[in-house]
Length: 320
Image (cartoon, rainbow, N blue to C red; front, side):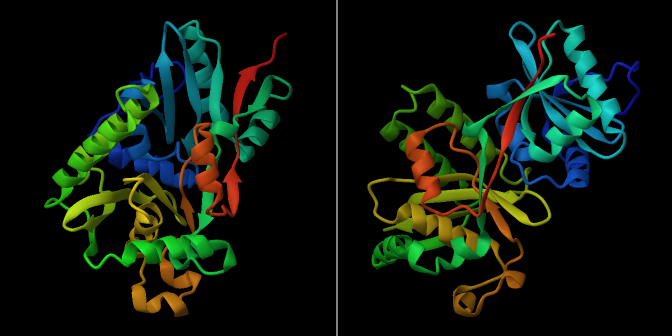
């Protein structure tokens, strides 16, 4: 899709796999660590959030929602004259009689908005959308007193003589899909809309695993898949974990798939762990996404000791 000026009707379109290359090229200019700036995230959640995209020069424009209920926009990613891109999405909102709103606005983006449009917007922290970012070294090595319980759970899982880890590939993708369906039956996807939406996004990721160039790993017990994880590089120094599924009644399955998958995606093997340093891993941070306001998930994510949170804001125009 060609870029154009404000008067050139750059239309928002449905996201297709064929958009991946040009979208990634624009995202790379900004190099954000936030999950919203990832093609896979946009693609696998597009039906839930009614997400559409457009290109304006070297900026990626992202819009979610429907005309009847109002749109929400993401701060444009790319390079060039940011005010032109912001003015364009403001005009798009106005054209559809939608109040202008930006979601998941980062701290550095908030500063840009204040410089360009002083006093025009209100900024509301969106705690449920804050991303949890961890040290890759921490999650792979699990060193230190604060990770003692995690190491214990991993040891407990590995005490099973018939456990195995393997990369996700063509040969076992179907088993991951089957495990996801079984997980849904066990934990109530049909009764809770958020779980149903997540299950839909997981199916989309697995169905398009190769086209999206994703990485994955799974755990087996007695030959059966009991956990799997899917992720990819998010930016120049951060790995993004999209999906992590395990059967909760199998002790240690969650911390084991977390650790083994990241070890697989790093440049290390088991023998390197004790001598490992950050330069050998290949990525400095791991983004494990937000908690969506779920208290149980929030507690679980905090137990892994994030090194920082990516704070985000909802931005709306101030009442005059």
